Image (cartoon, rainbow, N blue to C red; front, side, top):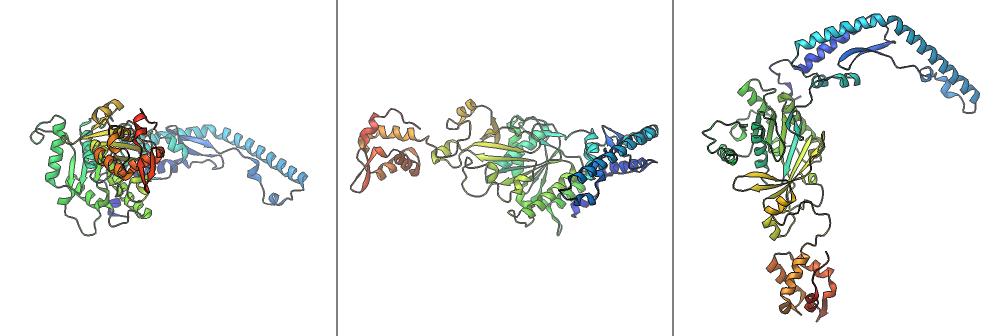
Length: 496
């Protein structure tokens, strides 16, 4: 058990207090009644008497009867009939015994409920639904607690007590997106179309200096209309700049955060609604991110921070290195490390550049357009969102409609491309060939491919694939492919 798990809260844990109250009620429930008749359970918001289940012939199934030969049907039939008769007598006796003790049982149940309500009144700030979960509970007790549900941080996306992961490629501006979320929750503003509930936010940053964070925060507030945020009081997140923190020997990152919170505020449970940890690799503590067992340990330490503070936790993570075409597979498959990264969190957000995997010409036009995908465990996952990052204001803007996307970047499609080879460049190649018909007629294929690539920016592999699919437009001369341009002169459009 780590130090983070043993740090005592400033007040007794309400879950422990509820458990002690429940234990006291159960001791009181052990009144003068035979356990064979039933037990006292918590159901429907109160303690009730639950009669034991009805007897069946299986309750009277003797060991010897299991060894009766299959051929002795008459014996088997007599044995089953005898057992069913015994079950009927037992049920009748049970019904009569409960009926005789009903008044006594009801009186004891009322006494227990009076004790229970009095105990709850002493801890009236308690959330019983959450508090009962530290100890084993029966089905009736779990269903019977009518406490408040999870407290919303971001509507339809994130609640207190959840762990979320925001992943993206290196230099994909995901830290800007996380900081934008921190500012939004601090003020109760919308974030990419999601409504948020105003609350306290702690941003734990391992990468940036104080000066860099000042610049970023100033830009975000100026984008929201606050001209001089350094002079005007604002509602904003709290920051823990880890580059300026001195670490004690053998102290983990989570232990360090909790120690600083304890030294700063003394009381930190319930202080924050959202804590953002940026980035995840700083919390690995030398463990292998590709090892599932070790990553479970890492996320368990993050869970200890969540339990100690009661907040929602958002962690920034990275995609695997290398060029990725986000259409090739699920975006969660791009996250670096073990599959635990996508299975442990309650919410996974993946930020992908739409330019990844495209030609250089398209990459330039789609430089600041992103796709944000959602994987949510407890709710219906929102649909993918298209985002535009404004490099001047450093704000991500949600592009809710296809028309809005086309207005900003005419090359962006409103939905992900299907798997397989895209032929959207075919019309461009055809148009170029028509314009250059006289110049290119009879030229070697390799020469034409280089010309098309140089003038249009379309990759050579794409151009070669075009001619491979349109093999009837080429012929062989002197052991090399030559293009017959006269055939292109008759083309008006090409089938994709």
